[in-house]
Length: 243
Length: 232
Image 1 (tube, rainbow over the protein chains, first blue to last red):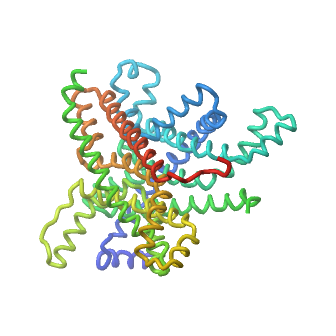
Image 2: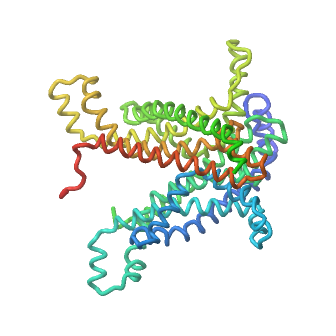
Image 3: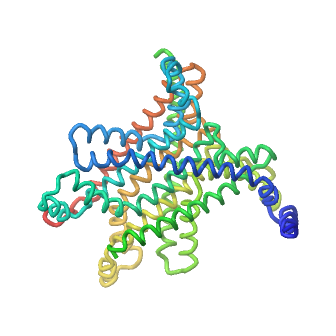
């Protein structure tokens, strides 16, 4: 073990433009960052996913009024940068005395909660559009068969439309998960120590220009690789009948 | 309200930076995208491999990480390269150039996917027909491939452009004075962060709506004479 470390140390100081030894010596910093990144990713995916289902159903079923409201919300979220949305929530809301005086302030003054709120809103809008597309792609005959069998509309939604839509949405949803992972790095702009935040404080600590960013980039690539693998396995299981 | 009027020229300068950055980046992205698409449909295995690692890298690394990496590390790399080759003594990578390079590089990968898909959508029979009437490669490209490439690539191009504009917001993190940076500064100076961030949000929304409408019009022009669906 010590021998391997020695090799890495010598390689780092003599050959490599990157000081791997220093990065490994600070692994706990990146580990903490990784944990925060993954929590932000998973929680925002869960909350965003739960919000996305009703939005998508309302859009696909063209429920009057609600459809237009959902469309406006989705257009607003998708038409503006997440960074600005995050700034509006985190820096912006403090402008109002009413917000600062309310019970919600305990949540809204924390960068962590603001990041979770804005990431969840962001992913909900994109996921809703993916899901709406998948619902609308349902073969007409399946819905007609359900109607012919006397299934009420909500039951049709639950038993026929949603299960097959979720399956068909998998490949696009995989991309959305990866984009959402990319978005989580914005947390570092509101002082959260995620993977990028860890890289920034690592660079600051040792007066380095890029080492920390390279390390973070490699970890991100590994996460994307794992996400892609998970989705490929899921697709193989769930889309078997479509092959 | 008085504050908004007082800061209007300042905000306008930021808007101009955002727009020019977007335009410069999309030009870089289109060129890289065409190169990437050509590499991925080419018969050379090496070119295929380069194209696929290009999109793997862009898919794997978040945009902001790229930007900080290039802005901070690019400077060091550029200067050590200069002193190693003896070609230049000191070079500076400013925020605008860093932004254009990074955003162009990232969206070049998405563009190459779009162009590749569009190229694949052109029926092979048409290219064969062109060859059979004796068209050479240039004529074939100009009259058969290009018009259809544009038609099939436009929807993807629209999406890429819309997300590219939003991605430019990240340059505020490396200190380029775009609409987000200036809006943030104005918000802090006046203690009205909500007002000014909301203005920045509105600016992006407006830019999105305008390009959305303009590009849909263009799409309709390029799909003239194409009927979608069978019974329409």
